[in-house]
Image 1 (tube, rainbow, N blue to C red):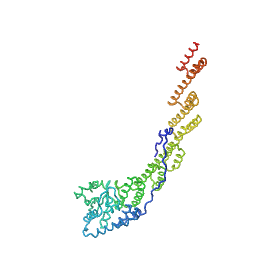
Image 2: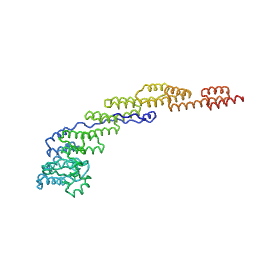
Image 3: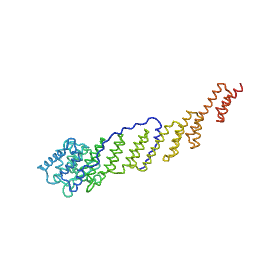
Image 4: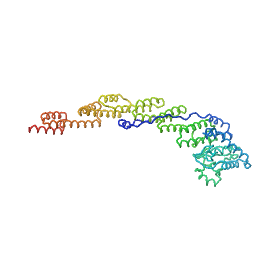
Length: 493
């Protein structure tokens, strides 16, 4: 994508007040390789999941196998196993699917679920604390329901998840697992009275098919990863979110019937968002060089056209910093190191930035007419800057050179210099204004010299001087007044 990067900002390089660059510290990057277990669970979907596999999968998706306390997944599996045994051996467990499904929901709420927490999607946390959200409760219900022989799959809306149970024949019933009254909620008035109060969601009935979408058991479990990613990023822990997004892509890599819904987000697109979010967090922290290294690693593993825009933004940010600090050679090195990653349009735009900043730097360092001539020669030769910008820089150089001449020699030298510049390059308002200023200054110099001669009563010298001055500025009223004054003085003498 070609972008306009030249701005008048770089004229600020000619004044004091440069911005200090932030230190570029070492950064540890998150892994870009998926856990092999993700591919293993993906392959197992073809044969269908047992409740044991769903338990293992859900705890893995919760991160229970990588807890700080060590390998705790067996502990949580034991809790599920105990609940399954209790459920199966319960003398009250109904025989028929509809009643059995309702019994499982009541059992789950009585044994495990205590407090609804919108972002608590981890199964291990649910088992130990009793806090849950729609995803973690739906996953636990699915495991328990499968363990007693029920056919269960997921359902989701734009911002909510629940499950559906095959109640026999063609009867498919919703189960809003976040609520103990959520079995077949369309028939429960008391459910509607408290469901939104408890969860903040509105139940979407089956007849509103466009507002809900069916998802597989695997896709339902994957929402645990999605919820965890969202929660981590809300706390700016972008590096921890990356492995989860990578694993979600691997987990969903072999789906038999991928959810065709706006509600179930594309795992590859979500991964790109997470990768870019981590990269942007590095830029925000002032670690642009690390962000570029990250882009190189991540793009090689997960190529996408969005990397071009990201790399452009990072290179642009870093170049601006370097150029603000007049580190031109480092800016050129940065561009050269990223040529293979940038589009031709972006490369051309960045080259304009660097050439412009280099010329500004050299222009600001002019200390003599030779320096000015060297920069003017460069401006005559440069081809990639817009003509208007070249004229702007050239005018700056000409005016600075003229000011130096006026200080070191005289306004006459500055005046001659500007006149020659106009002949060489043509007129513009700034040069014409400068010309007028130096003409005025020259007249003042001539008048002051005349006054000095007059005050020392060197009338003949003053008379000749003012005649010569009027040859330089014919008809000038100030010099003409001086001529009238000296002629009257000579007559009185």
